[in-house]
Image (cartoon, rainbow, N blue to C red; front, side, top):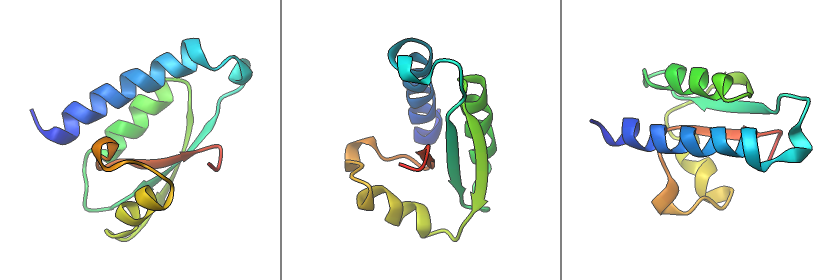
Length: 92
């Protein structure tokens, strides 16, 4: 199993729990994830599908290979939580 797949499953599970159980202010609406996708990665489409099943709307923005790596530290994501997938929920 790849690191991407392992982290993806863990993060998808956490996201599902947050959406279904931990974020009452989101009840009745679907939050938007803007997914920044490196066109060279095949797993981003699957991650987007997982997020849709978890209750998010997903907007895909194809970006160059370096953009996701820059967005993570710029938005306070600690290195230990970084994976290949990058998105912003409701603009944050």
